[in-house]
Length: 323
Image (tube, rainbow, N blue to C red; front, side, top):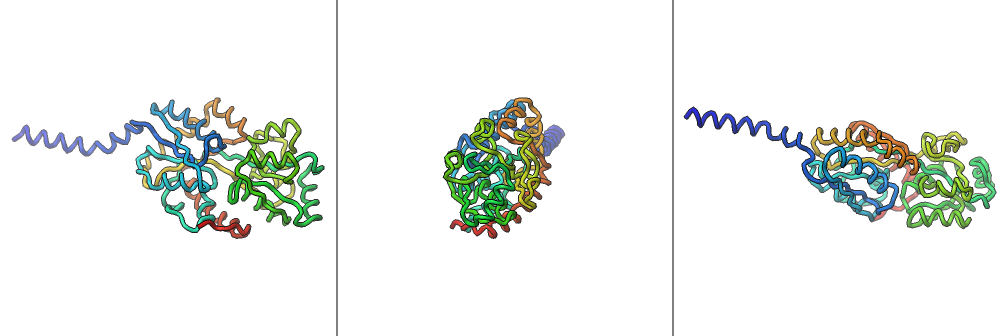
């Protein structure tokens, strides 16, 4: 009986330590990272840059799963319904906080079905224009737009995209009248601006950095709260005289809600470690991306605040809501 009693105590002791042991062992199998955009997009490139280093550090494969479509909501839905065990996570852009305002019905709740891990980067958009337009500064663009109301247009990488919302916020802050011309992506938008058929575009830096350096596009301002490290001589729209025009286009990591806090904290620490890697720093510089992190709690609060502010922006811009 003593032996049985001792064995029982051992079993109970092991059972009590199993959850902690299981979590300490994380990760013990491959991790899937859902990116809600196509391969080759800025979000995808940044996701792969980070997860490559995280995989080496964590000792497990991290597989990027591109689930593009429906402005990112297909990928969001897949993560929201995944098991909250740290083996399915998401790297998404600030479009995450736009979808509640641009879709009438979603299969998930953006505010409660995700746990923020950390932002990864702030990726400024740059307002570019063809030299043939003979507009060399942001004040000159504003003067032309105000003298010719309704005659200017701008490109965007799709209705409700970060490039579109950046341009809409700028337009409202500057009190100008310009028409959005949506395209399927940045490549087509840049091509139309280069040709002069479209007046200007708030582009991610990566697709236009070569043209800016080569002089085939002029960079008038960046839409971000701070200057871009890749374009240190280009002012922000705020510095160029347009108050309340800043737009923060970010890329960040999230997990399904109820993911254990120690796993969230481990992933946060691994992202911070990866961002300090010289290879990642060099890659970000080429993309025009600036590393940016917050604690999981701060990121959750930031997301909730941005959902509210984007709802106001979407309504003010008169964007159509998809069914």
